[in-house]
Image (cartoon, rainbow, N blue to C red; front, side, top):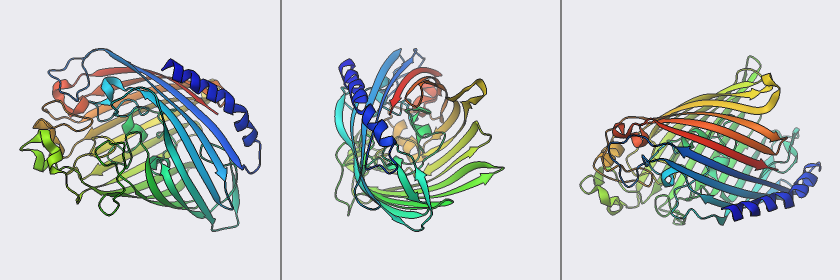
Length: 435
């Protein structure tokens, strides 16, 4: 881990000058950015009446995660650009990132080998078509070339990316590297969004963007197996569709947005109800033609110049097994973020959020019968909604570059199990570098 971290620091230093040079250009031809994030999480022991193979361990635990990403962007021709992101990731979540549907660290995934590995995170091409001559300036950023862009346009993106880069965005709660860390706060937990183990997939994404309205559609590959690394290219039998509408508004002079999300996925998913007779073998019920669909709402609103709030709610039908994200079928979350403007640290942030998550009846019955998903499995289930509160303070240590965060999470009923109610106290420290 230390060796990989040193490599990350070297990459950060090497590309810093390039990025600063690119940022000074009016219309970037080449964009170079970098991020590295280390999260250390610790929890004391808590009481649990029993544990299963996918339970959050009741013993004291501490784990560290690391990601380092290089963001390369290249302008191709008028309106076209390409993006390439190699990524180093490693480490583990608490208990190997199992036992908690809300999942405590958005930088970790349910993988068997925690050793740091380099992989291709994103490689895609984007074509933008202007619908107006009016332009606004777009600053250089990660996977974003600096330059003038039309205020209204349509675009198509093809290739490997994170679908959450385009959908379910929220100004106050969407990035575990700088905001809230829990999975169910960074995205809508009931959206079983298409992705491999590391959170990426091949997609075709269509967008319409205007100052007030945005509409997005994506057709994305699903993994071959639940939480799998390999993607299923049999698009006639396995595919996920995502559709989102965004309305931007101003209330009392403060900006806000509301997003409505719907999705439909079909794959060889197992059936919770058909598995009850033999819950240890849900794989025997996996056949093509099974589906999962759901809906979500996502709102953000500035309250004052330094205070904002957010709200998310989501639902899915929950008849077939979770395939890609996490085992949540119903979710409601909300919170507030305050900048440090009042104490003369305008780039600091303090955030407080709460999320309550639930399961469909079929999903509950499956876990109660002793079934295991890729996140949950206590051997049985005394059902109660899983609840999590998160508080963080992010301090800017070097302007626009280095951030140090301390966070606290309070978790009740991990894995939706009242017999293992806790509460569980989780303490986190995060170091985030970006250029």
